[in-house]
Image 1 (spheres, rainbow, N blue to C red):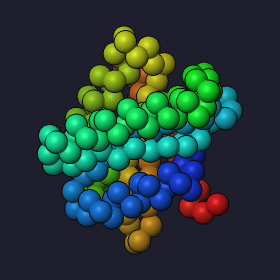
Image 2: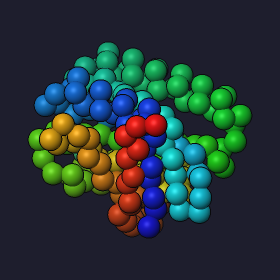
Image 3: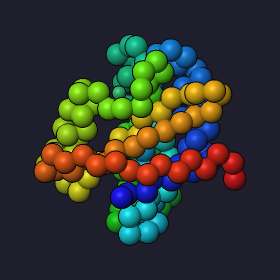
Image 4: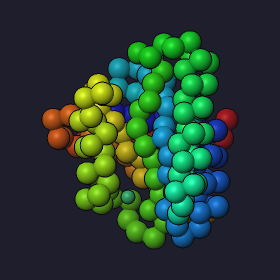
Length: 155
Ligand SMILES: [Zn+2]
């Protein structure tokens, strides 16, 4: 089973985004370091805007800038540091992918231009003042498997 670790910085980014979005869904991209055979440490999470096209385009721009910065900082070592997937919140329903979540992730992972071997979907919500997360890995052959998520709340 793939193990997905969220760094304290990523934890705070996601938690703050969820708190700001309140009952609306929010989400973004995840960038991770491949730290062991089946283990990834998420080092960066972007936050996409909610609700408007302008917000979405701005978020996309921010995402690309952060992507460039991430690759520059990690010296374009794509085998070790790369895009790993997406995160989004389910503020008012269960931490389980919807059919639309499944469809989105299958689209991402089966896009031949990305050449991805897999993509991870992390779904989060704030429960009892704490961020809880679950994750699934999607493969180009259409399979979906559970991941283990480790949230590292504090450094
Ligand atoms: Zn969803």
